Amino acid sequence: MITAQHIAQLQQQFATFITPLWIHVEVASQSLRLLRQDKVLQEYPVSTATLGVGCEQDSYKTPYGAHSIAACIGGGQPIAEIFVGRRAIGKTATIEQQAVATGEDLILSRILWLKGLQGNINQGAGVDSYERYIYIHGTQEEGLLGQPASHGCVRMANQDVIDLFEPVMVGTFVYIAG
Image (cartoon, rainbow, N blue to C red):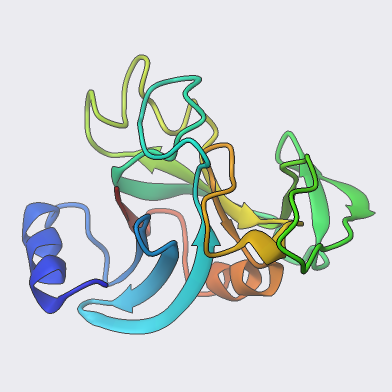
């Protein structure tokens, strides 16, 4: 659970990066919160990496720390639209509502591509979140939300990521608490 003290610490520590509207991902609770300054506007269940938290290239872990949104992809696409190489392919996925792994890690509905802001942590050679293609995106495995299940990205329910996509923009601050 994010506390007022934690919010204040992040706002002070990342004052040069933090935006009035920002996102806080908490791996421990598998939740994503949209905040306006210090007020939580919305909270969503998510799935982060099955293998845990880490910033190393090819680790299949969710990177921690300060990020910003580098690209917002998929506006206007239908819910459950499948993206390959960040391009809509004109097909939608079947959404699994049961807590069942489908064996696929599809990228659906919207993509918020993250860029690390901390050198040698989540930015730079061997640890770069942007080069690792770390996204916040929709998933076909909605039944697994609330537990680690991804290959490194932050997965959301499709309607939730569509809703989140609307108010955010390139440059929006994102903090992933490992």
